[in-house]
Image (cartoon, rainbow, N blue to C red; front, side, top):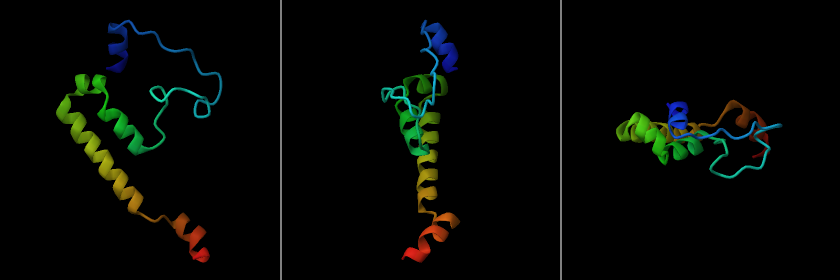
Length: 88
């Protein structure tokens, strides 16, 4: 849907990234989200997503991803326990 939107609006894709896109300095509006929460926040403000999927779906999906992030952050992983338990 977003590809078709770009075609309909006559948008030109940016130049290909020659290196590591995660390390490349780009503006915030072009930076790929690094976490689920960042992605949900970006989706919530996307006019294109709202036009393609509808207000209700975007609001529901964003809320469900924010809830998933809350649950994830409340979990202490085995790696955290192994790495930090002895330091406490």
